[in-house]
Image (cartoon, rainbow, N blue to C red):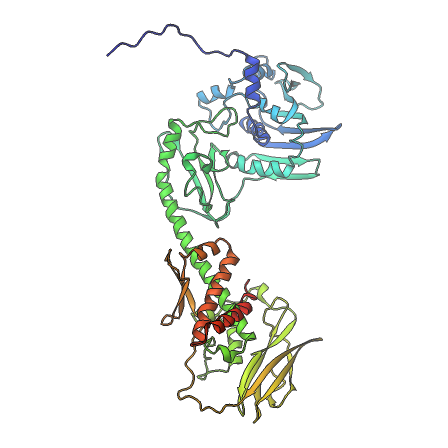
Length: 597
């Protein structure tokens, strides 16, 4: 093995142009809100219990002032605020020495926080008092390498520190008190909680006063998660499972201060579960190393690698939780879609001739041992969730479910065929403006507007019509009254006779409205099939039309509704020519989609 050649020359790196380096550092902070957060953090590091942020305008100049009651600027040997050290030790913060000596709870370490005022305004004023109570001020200007320190006359000694930036840059003038409040509530969330500092914002321009409170997350707090472990330090995890939304993010924090708004901004974490949209919360990693300029970037060193490895078991568990939540959401969505489609179909049947759609036996027997009439069954269905197939009673009405004043009335069925010398019952269906069923304080008056026949119980909600001995067309009218309000509804009755004998055994038994289920069959042409034995419609959720429809809720709802119409019309009119089946499908689809919401 050949020996390594001896270096021809060696040396130490140094700054070629100090002022150019300071300019680069001062302009490296691109976010003025982050700069304001750093000013507040300096106050927290100085032990402040109260911090006031004042936004205002004086003599035509917009300014931002931060006042705290902390320990102020560290004092020199003479007891004066050591402004000179602050101005001449850039990148050599006194906080670094304090950390080496064992101080905890201190965030700053680079000694460049004050320079970020360049991204906020033109001039910086920093005021603090000496041990004997005299007040001193240091001033800096953007783009200038000099600073000045002078005694400032005040009636009352300044307790803590007063920092003022003025005039503000044009783009910073639009930072309202609400924006600053929201940003600090997230940025300094845990620092506020741990230290108990009270941060107030006084927006004199908008004449508002606000309190910065640590951001609270919504959703369900996840317990018993695998705890990430690293020899470098403790990792704090606080995660919430929420409804899926692109607004949900898991923030990355270091020692209580937010570093990244979303963990997924890092390439390593730009994947599930962090990009799923189901999670929000924080992960606090105190041993990460930050990029000094913006303090919103992570150095991908061994500390970052240790953090990345430690959260892998957590990622596996979160993926399982999200998968379970997705399945539950899909089941709830399917039940909701089924209920909506079935309700729309039921509403369509009220408007269509029921005798032509006798396959829809959607009414269930009452509890008195007899099969009730169609109007009685419909009244019962208005109170029960029989459409879902479980026969369970509906939950107690919420306040917003109670009906409003009478707005309309319709006769059910609206069109019917009645044999001669037979009877049929009709019901008045009264609704409010939002189509809720109205039941209280109603009075009814029925009459035969045109044609023969006899009505019984013409003052009730449900009447019996007795058909004449000869075929005829009959118009039926009902007037519904509630107080002074009065509305009318009409129905058409076709009284028929036949020369053909009635088939033995009567009509085929009807079926209730079916449910639906999914079967994934990508590449196959069929969209849906009716399973008569199970009374369910099987939908191919692998079909390209279903995939396209699923991208939008209402589009998916209409697609499933049309599949229902296709299957139900096909079964309801066996043997009918194809062109007539298509006509019936358009008819049922039209009346059904009108009621989709």
